[in-house]
Length: 415
Length: 83
Image (cartoon, rainbow over all chains, first blue to last red; front, side, top):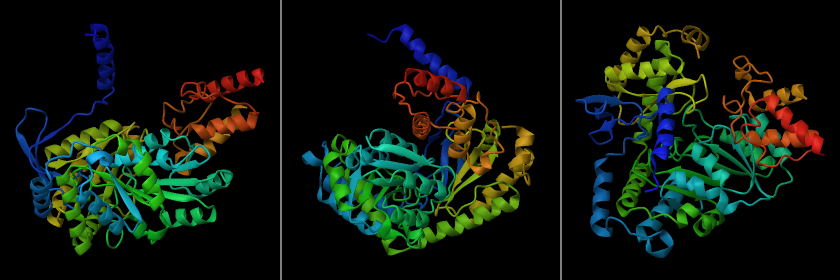
């Protein structure tokens, strides 16, 4: 019993500070499968409320698709619940290799390796193939998991201003003495919903002899004409050296991630990536579900087309209503409120009105950049989105922010 | 020295649209306010080392020591003195 009351107090007071600063994250309990409409218990202990979900990464609406569920059920019967092993001991079934092959084909890459999550893929990939004589040059807004992964690697690190090609070029020039230069970016940035200019990044990579790694977690399945990702959107499918992505968002929404790309990089991950070597293999039902998702998406672009239509309607509707949104083409549409408290108040009122959204503020987003991040799904339809738009107008009107630009919202509410 | 460091921070860390919103002087918190994140701090460290021909040990290039231009200047001067 070394957990003394003094230690308890230390931990307790840290939590109190977070509470006072309004930084405690509170979970809402959902009593239904993931979908466009969900049953939510919030606050804890209250009656269930039926709300429209505008904050899931369920971009293609496949999280609860009957064919995916059935495929997972079948694998549960045929291949079991779990394998109680890492991949290289006795945790690789035929379906794991099948899924790796299907992902390589879908993403247009040489080879793929599965990880328990994309967080793990990003934690393992850099250390697996880079060494102290190499340099990683990453966009300043890359996902936290990439930041963690880079920290675990001994290569030199540098960053460039978000999507700023001039700055990236300067850094590439500066690091010409390194053995490998690796440019690292998200395909779609999760908090802003904007796209990395992969065509320009690849042109610079060619000019300065650099490799390119893209985290396409918020793009795989729907960006590009056939949903292969941001590289397809920009016409650079064969120019990306490494893609990391997740099976936990558009591609089924359960769990799992991968590193996909040059075969030597993938093999180095298989031999050296610690989250791969030291964590359990993906459970068979998840593998089979993901295989079914790829089969559905390879057969039809219907879902990504619908998502695109929903995105267009939503972005146009919010803009016409007089709300400030971050511009872009992706189904991540942040409604900018700048003030942290305002973002929480608006999110709470929208929930009352039957719309489930979350307000984000510092440190999740930069100080003074508080927002409500809305995310579209192919499970939504136009009447449902119209209902949500009406709610945003009502709440926006209540707070007097419709038609106000950034400067005037900040004047009214402060930063 | 302060001006050169401020100028570097402006050009290296602020975007054009930020420049109106962010007031920057020698006492502005850099790390704790999010202007410079601890990860991109490495380029600032490299700049200081190159500019002043010094070597800053990793354990001294802490988020606290790099939090304001004023504290950065103290750190650099101490190392210049050692050189």
